[in-house]
Image (cartoon, rainbow, N blue to C red; front, side, top):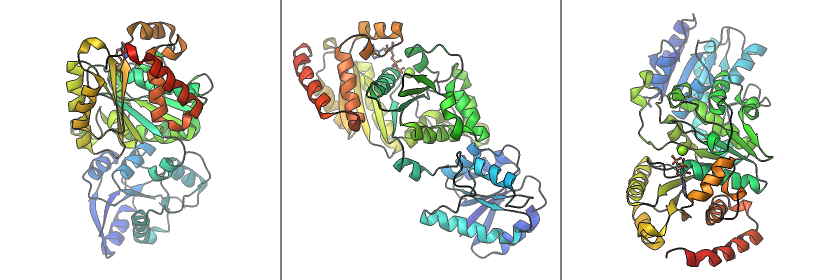
Length: 427
Ligand SMILES: Nc1ncnc2c1ncn2[C@@H]1O[C@H](COP(=O)(O)OP(=O)(O)O)[C@@H](O)[C@H]1O
Ligand SMILES: [Mg+2]
C-alpha cells in the first residue's frame, strides 16, 4: 500500500488528482494538506510514502523537499505548465524533485506515484530532469561514497573543548595539503571564527542556509566559506545564539552534502542531544536540529570530554545518551585537559570509557593553557605558535581520524617524539 499526501495549494488539479489516486488499487490518500507547513508536519508522522505537491506552492523550497526525503517521503510535483517547459525543469531541478507531472498529463499521476515509490524501494532514483546541472539533490548514499568524509565533533555541556578540537583537527589536516571544510554548527553560538581570528560579521552558516533555501547552495557554497590558506574553508557560525531559528535541519543537510564535494568536513556542534522538535510549531526541527543533523550525517563522531570529575561524569552520561540515539557512525573519544593533578591515570580513564561505549579509539590531550592562550591571541592553531605536547597530541588525533592524510614517515617521527615526551606525563 502506497500512502500519499497531497498539497495542491488551492490549484484546480486537486479534485481530479484525488479522484484518480483514490481509484488506483494499492494507493491511498492519507491527507490533503493546506500548505507547506501542514505538509511538513504531516510527514513527521512517518506514515506517508509519497507527497504530491504543487510545484508552485508558496514556501516550497529545497529545504522542505529535503525534509520530505529525510522522512522517507518521495516528492512528485504537479505543474499547471507543460512538464517539458524550461522554467518548470529548472524549478524542479532547484528543488531537487525528479518526478514532474505537467498539465495534460494528470491521468499519469497514479502511475508516476507508483514508479517513484518502486524506485525508492529498489534504491533507484527516477531520471533527473536535468542531471548535468549543479544544485541537484544528491542522495545521501551517493554523497557518502563520493567526496570527503564528515566528522562531527560533539561533547557534553561544560565546554570540554569541542571547538578547540574541531578547529585544530581541521587546521592540522589543511596543513597536510588536504582540502577541508570546517563548519561551525553550534546552535548555542559560534566560536570557530573567534578561535581562528576571523573578524567577519557575515555568518557563513546563515548565508549557507539562505542559499540552500533558494536552491543555490550547490554552485555558491565556496562564496560563503572563509578561506584560510590554500586548503581550509571555514563556514563561520551563528553571530548570536538566538539566530538558530534561521537555520533549518534540511539546510544543514544540504550544507554538509555540498561541503563533501569540496573535501573532508569537520563539524563543530552543540552539546544538547534533546530532540526538541515538538517545541516548534508545525513539528519543524528545533534548536538542537543543527547538532542532531550533523551527528546523523557524520561518518565518524569525535566525542570530547574534560578530564576532571565533573567533566568525566558528563562524558560518561554523554556516551550513554549518544548510544541511545543509535547513530550509524563510529565513536572516537577524546579526553581533554589531562593533567597530573586530577588524580586519575590514562589507564583508569580508559577503563571508565570502555564501560560506557565501544569506542573506535581513545585519545588524551594534555592541559596547555599558555599554549592555547598564545594561539588564541595570534588567531592561529597551536601548531603554528611553537612545538608543544598539545600540538603533538592533536596531530596524532588527526592521524587517527584521517589516516590517509599521514605519511608513514610522519607517523614514525611522531611516535618517537611521543616516546620522548612520555616521562613528563603521569601514567
Ligand atoms: N587542552 C586544553 N588546555 C587548556 N585549555 C583548553 C584545552 N582545551 C580547551 N581549552 C580551553 O577551554 C575553553 C573551552 O574550550 P572550547 O573548545 O571553546 O569548548 P567547547 O567548544 O566544548 O565549549 C577555551 O577557553 C579553551 O581555550
Ligand atoms: Mg564550542
